Image: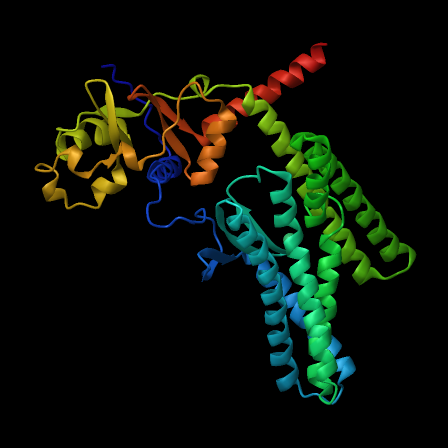
Amino acid sequence: MDMTTHPPSSSRDTADAREASARSAVKPERTRYALPHSGGLRLGTWFGIEIRLEASWFVIFALLTISFAGNLSIEHPALLPEIRWPLAVGTSILFFGSILLHELAHSLVARRRGLEVHGITLMLFGGVSHLASEPKRPKDDLAIAVVGPLTSAALGAFFLALAQLLSPLPLAKSVVSWLGFINLGLAAFNLLPGFPLDGGRVLKALIWSVTGSAERAYRLAIAAGKFVAYGMIFAGVFMAFGLHWSYDGLWIGFIGWYLLSGAQASRLQLTMADALRQHLVRDALRPADAIVRPDETLAAVVEAWVLNKGCRTLAVSEGGKFLGLVTLHQIKELPRSSWASRMVCQIMIPIDRLITIMPEQNLLQAFQRMSERQVSQVPVVSDGALIGMLSREDVLRVFAIHMELNALSSKGS
Ligand SMILES: [Zn+2]
C-alpha cells in the first residue's frame, strides 16, 4: 500500500481550517437540515428549518425603526417618546416577521417539492432561503418562486383589511396600514422580472418551460436582472440629483447596486458550472494526508502522523479497502492516557457514515454534492479503495486555472 503524506501546514490558521474541514466531511446524521457554520445569530428552528440573523440585519432593523418612529412623530405629534419607540420597535419586528413568512413560504414549498432546505437567513435586504440544489422541473421553480410574493401580497391585504376595522384607534390603524402597504410593496418589488428577485425566477421558469433549456432560461433571467438593476441605479441617481429626493434616491440606487451584484454572482455561478462540468474529480484530487491501519493504537498514529507530519485527518485502510476517517479532533476528545490502549477502528467514522465521491464523476457533480451535504471535503473512492481526498479548495483551484487558461487562449486567438 502506498503511503502518501501531505506537507504539514506551518500556519495555525490553515491547520485549524483543515481540521474543521475534516470534521465536516462527516455526514450530519441526526440534523437533516444543518446550516453551514456561518456566522450570525441562530433564532431557532421552525418546521425543521433553521432561522438565522446576519449581523447586517441589525443595521436595517435600526434604520427601519428610526424611520418609522419619525413617521409616527409626524402623524401623531402628541405621542410620548416612551410609547413611540417601543411601538416603532414592535412594528419593525412585525415587518421582519412578514419577511420571515415570505421566506418560510419559499422554503416549505421547496421542501414539499422534494428539495432539501438548509435554512433561512435574515439580512440587510430581507431574507434568503438556502436550498441545497436547484429545482429539477420548471413548474417546481415557478411554484417555489411565486409563493413568496403571494405570501407578502396576502399579508398586505390582511393588514389593510385589519386597518379598516381599527379606524376607531388611529394609532393602531397607522401601524397596521403601514404594515399592509409595505407588504404589498414587497410583493410588487419581488415580482420585478430579473434575477435574483423572485420575479426573475418566475421569468426563468416560464422561459424554461417554453424552450426546454434551464440554462438558457437562467442566462436570460440574469440578463433581465442586470437590466432591472441598472434601471434602479439610474432611477436612484435621477431621484437624488435631478429631483433632490436624496434619501429615496440613495435607497433605490443602493438596492439596484445590490441586485446588480446578485445578478453578477449568478452569472459567475453559471460560468463556474460550465467550467466544472469539463473536469473530472480524478484530475483535481489530492493524496490523503495519512493512511493508517484500523488495528494501530491512537498513541502510535499520533506519534507517526500528527506529531511528526502535522496531519489532522487520517484515512483508515486495510488490504486496499478504505474503512473510514479519524480526525485529530476526535482523538483530542479522548483522555491522553487512553491513547495507548485504544485502536483506530474503535473511534473512526466508518465509510457508511461518510459522503464519498468517485474519481470519474465531474467536478460539478462533486461540488454540488459537497454543497448539498454541507461538507468541505470528501474522500474519493473507487471499488472500495481510497484514491484521494477532494476539498472545495481543490475544486476552486481547478476553476481558477480553467479561467486563467481561457483568458490566455482568448488573448492568443
Ligand atoms: Zn422571495
